[in-house]
Length: 322
Image (cartoon, rainbow, N blue to C red; front, top):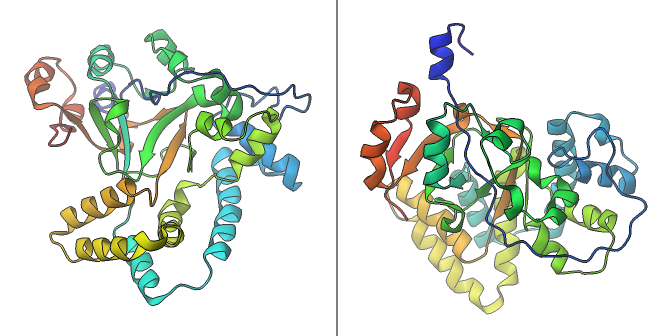
């Protein structure tokens, strides 16, 4: 951080409501005397999953810092995926290599303009999870994340992002935050959101849900490789539709320029359910991790009157997508 107060101000970061708009619902969970939370780390984003992994695998990853713990678990999960995929055909190798060549996989956070205005004009300093003190003071409403997800992995201490779709998902807000840095804070991704995962196998204890969910955990260091192997695996699962999808992907790979090719490729992967992760960042995400903040063109004039630091204004752009 710069030493002068002026430059510190120019480094101002943003608070925005970043919790995915998940419909609250009740998941019936059996009484569980062996809860995999502990008093010191119960509500840290992802920490209950690390504790659950240790309990079943007899490891000591919970003694590591969060980033190292996520990376250790992710490595084991990736090894399982690589073994599952096994040898690839010639076509599969081409797509695997192409996927890696179009990295990094897009990471996008979506929020709402009303919150952006309220919080930017209050000179807030970070995108924060609802349980963070500054977010609470700003009036962030955590009720849209079910309590069961907070118990599952500490959801109320997570900042959410979509990993895969190039423009995020409109259901989560009209403002687009594009991340340029993968690991501004400890983070992980999962193939499924917490509540839908629990709906799929009702009646388990929270400890059982946590152990099942942690086996989906992928750290940012493995996101690109996970998508490449996952693309191969999911194409195999498509049966008769696989041939057309490979043709579609090859057509995209022949297009130019690179920016369009990259966008079209990842959009197709998401649209055809060939790859997606829900990203979860621990507590805060700095503006230093953002490539841009994109808003509707109609509000650019309004934002110009907010008297924001020049470094923040330089990131704000009129978006060209919904």
